[in-house]
View: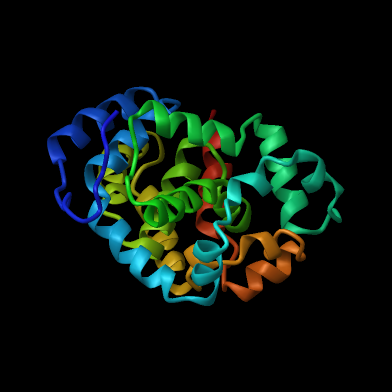
Length: 239
């Protein structure tokens, strides 16, 4: 299994990423290939975001106490027990309805050979990965191709990870064939909202799971994704 050494591996591998993106475009369910794109391109941005994270109060706590977000997100009974208006309960409903789990993301990442040999950097990378579906819940972007693309644009605005626009470049061309030029407006709005929102990688998710969902959205300045919702409704009507 390939290892990523944060002290020595500063390279991006565009050709490896391109091969993986082609597979994703042909089959959007190939989550493993998404992680191969991330592995090929994200090392510089991951380290940059990690440096920012470890300077935050939440980052210091997560690293010193060795907190793993996936432990909370895979505790279905705990999430289900939270009040219905909370982020945690909304996450439980979302993952149950979609029949997905944080464990599934972890398995896909491991299958792609994504491994980091620095313990703290690895913990941060896993926390980012595990929060993907929390991003879905907060932003209200669905798991349909357009929703996933808009969430990638939002995430790029948050992290500057160049693997995201690399995937978007390929995916948007396919979306354009079905949705027309308006797809780019939805993607731009996702990116802009990600830039304007507070920095989610430093979110204290373990606490926020217990908070009212709308309160968390307000706290992190996450608006309704109206362009996405409008275009999604149009596409649904057309089919």
